[in-house]
Image (cartoon, rainbow, N blue to C red; front, side, top):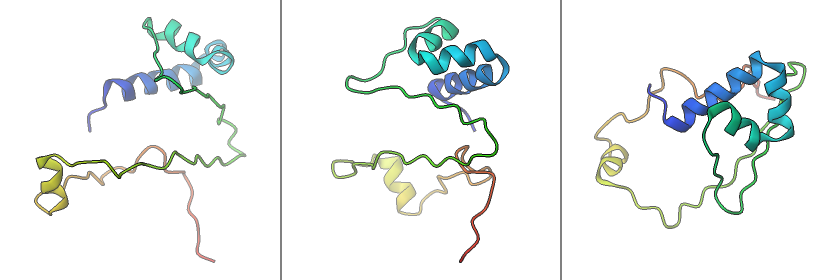
Length: 109
């Protein structure tokens, strides 16, 4: 699986925060400035967006992130995507779970 540029930058920032306590402190205090300093590039957020960095390294705490709901009303699929939906390709790599899957299971009640 190949990472996009933004995924690679994200991975580098997380790795640096794990390894460098000073960088981690800077990232928590001023994320935009810390990211720009670490990457050497201007960090642009879309207008009206805010960057929030939370330290989730405490292994005694389980965090749940509730992402924004997707707006799919005006989404149009391209030809390749339509082919995948129609069953023409596999399209999804299930060999490795996404990185946001927690390292625990939920048992049925």
